[in-house]
Amino acid sequence: MPHQVFIGIGSNLGDRKANCQEARAKLNELENTRVVAASSYYESEPHGNAKTWFVNSVIQLETEFSPADLLKQTKKIEDAMGRKRVKGKRWGSRVVDLDILLFNNEILNKRNLKLPHPRMAKRRFVLAPLAELAPQLVHPGLNQSISELLATVDDNKGIRMMFG
Image 1 (cartoon, one colour):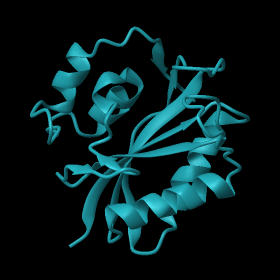
Image 2: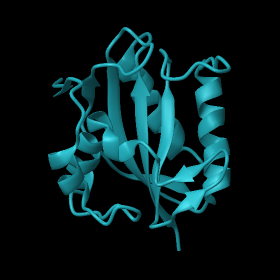
Image 3: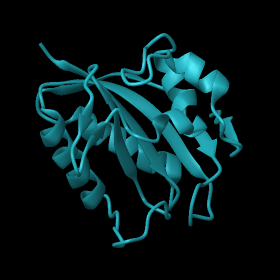
């Protein structure tokens, strides 16, 4: 039985929407994996060191990969698309960022992979597209629905749905 996974996609360099679309297509091409649903695209004000607004979306996948193997695949896609990692520098500009948000109802706390994603409940740019796909889905660690988390999130960064 395939795993149900939600992945956040973001980009703020180059053709941001095209980068997100390419990442979505590459995820759909993974062996024994398929995109089940995809949110709209949103523009969001950056957190941290980035200056340019991001384009974000969330996709729902069915996959047979384990969490660790799916993480490896997402890193390969990021690298192939030109993402540069700067050691010790977080939340900067990037061609593409792929974050595993939820993997079934698993709670995992490993050095390189934490599930659910540890900052998802604090970020409007994650919760808005996720609520579009699965508003009644319950966060396994917080026991609140995604729509409840979105309604109470303390994030003053701007976000707007993109059209066209």
